[in-house]
Image (cartoon, rainbow, N blue to C red; front, side, top):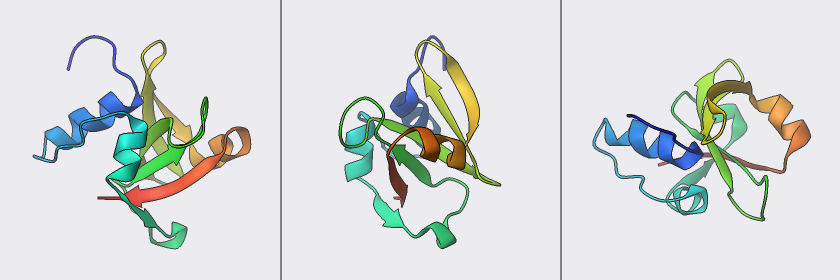
Length: 97
């Protein structure tokens, strides 16, 4: 993977490595996944937030221990805590393919 990548592009790339097509923006990926109760989340699940418009506008991949990996085209890839993001942005939930 080269160049700048945004949140949905990061997950599209990651899942493509194991043969799963998750092409599309965050809302499209939201629509392709199913809600997972928080007590059943596991690494590899999607984490969705609504940060600049209603609906799924930011997505990351849960990696365990309350953290997720996410990206934006201007800031690159980073690790974040789900609870910190929940305090700053509307949380849409954990989802799975």
